[in-house]
Image (cartoon, rainbow, N blue to C red; front, side, top):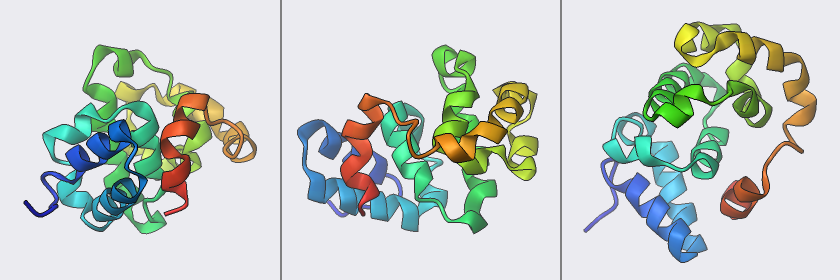
Length: 143
Protein backbone atom coordinates (compact mmCIF):
# COMPACT_ATOMS: atom_id res chain seq x y z
CA UNK A 1 0.00 0.00 0.00
CA UNK A 2 1.37 3.40 -1.00
CA UNK A 3 1.39 6.36 1.35
CA UNK A 4 -1.19 9.01 0.44
CA UNK A 5 -3.09 11.89 2.02
CA UNK A 6 -5.56 9.57 3.66
CA UNK A 7 -3.03 7.34 5.45
CA UNK A 8 0.13 9.42 5.93
CA UNK A 9 -0.94 10.58 9.41
CA UNK A 10 -1.46 6.96 10.47
CA UNK A 11 1.98 6.12 9.08
CA UNK A 12 3.51 8.99 11.09
CA UNK A 13 1.87 7.87 14.35
CA UNK A 14 2.86 4.24 13.82
CA UNK A 15 6.45 5.12 12.89
CA UNK A 16 6.68 7.36 15.97
CA UNK A 17 5.38 4.59 18.22
CA UNK A 18 7.85 2.07 16.78
CA UNK A 19 10.78 4.50 16.64
CA UNK A 20 11.26 4.31 12.85
CA UNK A 21 12.81 7.74 12.34
CA UNK A 22 13.29 7.41 8.58
CA UNK A 23 9.66 6.49 8.09
CA UNK A 24 8.64 9.33 10.43
CA UNK A 25 10.50 11.83 8.26
CA UNK A 26 9.00 10.40 5.08
CA UNK A 27 5.49 10.55 6.56
CA UNK A 28 6.03 14.10 7.84
CA UNK A 29 7.25 15.22 4.41
CA UNK A 30 4.21 13.58 2.82
CA UNK A 31 1.87 15.32 5.27
CA UNK A 32 3.47 18.69 4.53
CA UNK A 33 3.31 18.12 0.77
CA UNK A 34 -0.31 16.96 0.95
CA UNK A 35 -1.48 19.02 3.92
CA UNK A 36 -4.97 19.74 2.56
CA UNK A 37 -5.76 16.01 2.33
CA UNK A 38 -3.83 14.97 5.44
CA UNK A 39 -5.43 17.53 7.76
CA UNK A 40 -8.92 16.42 6.78
CA UNK A 41 -8.26 12.75 7.46
CA UNK A 42 -9.90 11.34 10.61
CA UNK A 43 -6.44 10.33 11.87
CA UNK A 44 -5.29 13.96 11.95
CA UNK A 45 -7.67 14.58 14.84
CA UNK A 46 -6.02 11.70 16.74
CA UNK A 47 -2.49 13.11 16.55
CA UNK A 48 -0.90 13.37 19.99
CA UNK A 49 0.15 16.92 20.88
CA UNK A 50 3.90 16.46 20.25
CA UNK A 51 3.30 15.11 16.73
CA UNK A 52 0.66 17.77 16.01
CA UNK A 53 3.18 20.46 16.96
CA UNK A 54 5.92 18.79 14.89
CA UNK A 55 3.64 18.79 11.82
CA UNK A 56 2.45 22.35 12.34
CA UNK A 57 6.00 23.68 12.75
CA UNK A 58 6.71 22.68 9.17
CA UNK A 59 3.77 24.50 7.60
CA UNK A 60 4.91 27.27 5.29
CA UNK A 61 3.84 30.84 6.15
CA UNK A 62 1.62 30.99 3.07
CA UNK A 63 -0.44 28.07 4.34
CA UNK A 64 -1.09 29.29 7.88
CA UNK A 65 -4.76 29.99 7.12
CA UNK A 66 -5.21 26.31 6.21
CA UNK A 67 -3.16 25.30 9.26
CA UNK A 68 -5.32 27.52 11.48
CA UNK A 69 -8.48 25.74 10.32
CA UNK A 70 -6.78 22.38 10.91
CA UNK A 71 -5.65 23.52 14.37
CA UNK A 72 -9.20 24.58 15.21
CA UNK A 73 -10.51 21.13 14.21
CA UNK A 74 -7.73 19.41 16.17
CA UNK A 75 -8.32 21.54 19.28
CA UNK A 76 -12.06 20.86 19.12
CA UNK A 77 -11.67 17.10 18.66
CA UNK A 78 -11.57 16.21 22.35
CA UNK A 79 -12.83 17.87 25.54
CA UNK A 80 -9.28 17.87 26.92
CA UNK A 81 -7.95 19.80 23.94
CA UNK A 82 -10.94 22.14 23.92
CA UNK A 83 -10.10 23.08 27.50
CA UNK A 84 -6.37 23.21 26.77
CA UNK A 85 -4.72 26.58 27.01
CA UNK A 86 -3.67 27.68 23.55
CA UNK A 87 -0.91 29.67 25.22
CA UNK A 88 1.23 26.53 25.21
CA UNK A 89 0.65 26.16 21.48
CA UNK A 90 1.50 29.80 20.87
CA UNK A 91 4.86 29.26 22.56
CA UNK A 92 5.64 26.37 20.22
CA UNK A 93 3.90 27.79 17.14
CA UNK A 94 4.46 31.57 17.15
CA UNK A 95 2.49 32.03 13.91
CA UNK A 96 -0.66 31.05 15.78
CA UNK A 97 -0.74 34.54 17.32
CA UNK A 98 -1.00 36.30 13.94
CA UNK A 99 -4.25 38.32 13.83
CA UNK A 100 -5.52 36.46 10.75
CA UNK A 101 -4.95 33.12 12.47
CA UNK A 102 -6.58 34.35 15.69
CA UNK A 103 -9.60 35.41 13.61
CA UNK A 104 -9.89 31.90 12.18
CA UNK A 105 -9.46 30.22 15.55
CA UNK A 106 -12.10 32.48 17.03
CA UNK A 107 -13.62 32.39 20.48
CA UNK A 108 -13.91 28.59 20.42
CA UNK A 109 -10.17 28.32 20.91
CA UNK A 110 -9.65 30.80 23.76
CA UNK A 111 -8.25 33.67 21.70
CA UNK A 112 -7.71 35.80 24.79
CA UNK A 113 -5.13 33.27 25.89
CA UNK A 114 -3.58 33.30 22.42
CA UNK A 115 -3.36 37.08 22.38
CA UNK A 116 -1.88 37.15 25.87
CA UNK A 117 0.78 34.66 24.84
CA UNK A 118 1.77 36.51 21.67
CA UNK A 119 4.29 38.87 23.22
CA UNK A 120 6.22 36.12 24.92
CA UNK A 121 5.84 33.52 22.18
CA UNK A 122 8.69 34.62 19.96
CA UNK A 123 11.30 34.54 22.71
CA UNK A 124 9.94 31.40 24.30
CA UNK A 125 9.34 29.35 21.15
CA UNK A 126 12.77 27.78 21.01
CA UNK A 127 12.81 26.75 24.67
CA UNK A 128 9.16 25.99 25.33
CA UNK A 129 9.06 22.42 24.08
CA UNK A 130 8.15 19.89 26.69
CA UNK A 131 10.22 16.77 27.15
CA UNK A 132 7.48 14.75 25.46
CA UNK A 133 7.47 17.09 22.50
CA UNK A 134 11.24 17.03 22.33
CA UNK A 135 11.41 13.26 22.31
CA UNK A 136 8.74 12.77 19.63
CA UNK A 137 9.57 15.66 17.40
CA UNK A 138 13.30 16.26 17.75
CA UNK A 139 14.23 14.01 14.89
CA UNK A 140 11.28 15.30 12.86
CA UNK A 141 12.49 18.89 13.17
CA UNK A 142 15.65 17.93 11.34
CA UNK A 143 13.60 16.85 8.30
